[in-house]
Image (cartoon, rainbow, N blue to C red; front, side, top):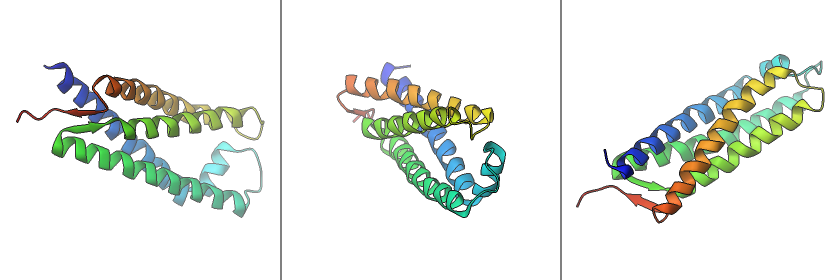
Length: 146
C-alpha cells in the first residue's frame, strides 16, 4: 500500500471518529443536558441557566460534527484531504480537554468527567499528528491517479 493511501485511510478513520464523537456529544449536550449535569456535577439543584449553556455547547459540537462529516465525505468522494479540518478539530479537542481537566480542579465536578477528557485528548493528539503530516504533503493531498 502506498504511503499516501495509508495516510488517506488514517485520516478517513479519524474524521469518522470525530464525526461520531462530536455528533454524540452534540446530541447529549443538546437534549440530555440536565441528566449530564446530574451525573457529572455535585451542584444541586441543577439550574436552567446551566442546562441552557450545555445546549449552546451542544450546538458548537454539532458544527464540528458537520465539519468532520463534510471533510470525510469530500475525502471519500474526491480523494482530497485538507489539513484545515484537522487543525480546527485538533484545536476543538484540545480546548475541550483542557476545560474538562480544569473543571475537575473546581471541586464541583465528579472524577467521571476525566472519562470524557481522555477521548478528547486522544482525538486531539491524532488530529495534530495527521495535520502535521498534511503539511508534509503540501496542505492538500490528492490521491487520484489521472
